[in-house]
Length: 370
Ligand code: SF4
Image (cartoon, rainbow, N blue to C red; front, top):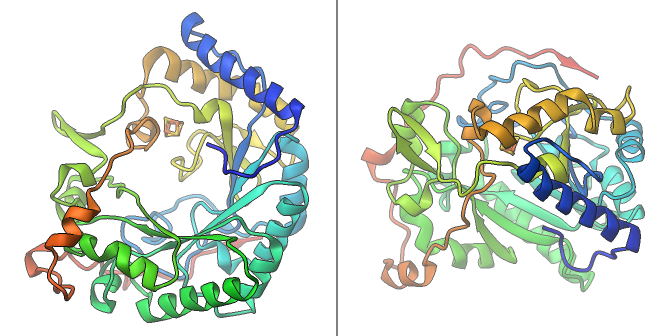
């Protein structure tokens, strides 16, 4: 759960032990006992994106809540409020974090406080605003590049509006500048969503990631919301899907019904709104606001505890919780075997695996609040 190399003071370990024991005991007594504060936090720097990925609520322009940008000042206030036990901050949610020009300063602030930072990006904007040296200077811990196609043609089927050549050039430049500093930080990860139209490229993933400067590849399963999306996007191989068919619905293949995130982490949107996790795209389960309330009151408040109680006593009854990755068994994709069988050139996308192209012609400029 925690990246290597983080210094762990005794009070942090006491908090961790308190969280772990109260999480376990809550499931015995069937009511939420929460004896500690989050050790990781996800903060949304901005809820806007330069791309239009069809399975992403912000990409598909389907997010219903207000859009906006977090300021550096509010970021600091949130860190002050959430507490001294936070050791990891993930800087993304809905939207492309590098659009927020204060992102490097937020990372530097986290570094100053001894917090390990991670950013997930589509990589399209890194060559602008001197971002690469600014991110390197800030002490970023991990940079995740979302790439779901290994050729320009397959890439733009899902990453609508993106250009693979630009992303790859940015990855190579990032790696060059990181090497020039004789540093292995930030770790560069190439993240891949296996989908029907790109599943034939999996055997080439590892070699491409290495050639493009990544330290490793992470395969994350695609999230779908409708049967139509399942038909169009879910890959054929069972092990590449997070879902199993249960009656007339798609359910995740989870090993347990509860949720560790409700004890160990929290999610804060650009405007300070606190929600249980990043799966609550539209703030359906709003717990409070970390800019206007004491976080301790929110964390131990009625709404959070009612939500925890439901998870403990009824399991994943909320639609959002039935569709999330919490409790999934991590799976192993036998890349070695697939690589050995692959022809030398990446084949084109089979026409029968192409999703319908979404029609974004009616998109207008969405209102943005600051
Ligand atoms: S969606 Fe998943 S991570 Fe979020 S609260 Fe529900 S079970 Fe936990």
